[in-house]
Length: 202
Image 1 (cartoon, helix red, strand yellow):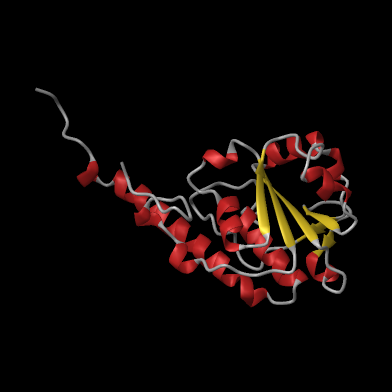
Image 2 (cartoon, rainbow, N blue to C red; image 1 turned 30 degrees about the vertical axis):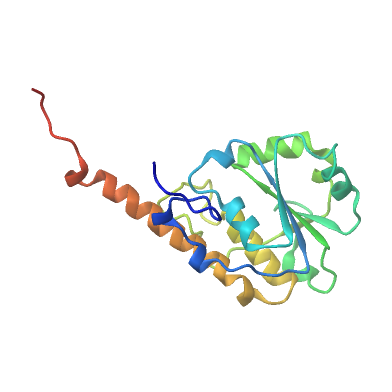
């Protein structure tokens, strides 16, 4: 059995904790994760959670009808990080930032289903972010559009804009980039001929 880091929950050979300090925030970040997303090797919602002390992670599909999400959904200072019609760029909310930022983690199909299952969360004022560079997944995960980002990247950019200090959240993105690099290197290593078993039998 491979040793696992107790903080980032990754194999110790792929641990990125050295690159991922705890970053204090004024904003309370509430991460809602689809259960299937939690099973993936690259779980950026968990990295986001451990990087931000003022954050929490809830797993499930229908969540906004029970505590503590029912209280979050009813809070007038809460906002939802999600693009689309009516979403306000995060930089435009810097003078009046939300006290709570809700972030949904999953594939786009999963996120749409979660929004349908959580109408009170879906009705929150929406905040959007635009990528300032290509998404960090690279060849590791195919996104529907080139400008789509991981949960970690979108959250880091949003907080940087809302709290007026983008540089403070760059370590999160650096740790994510390092994790992707390690994951891709492991995949290449597995495909290497020296790791393939001998052909034939006997």
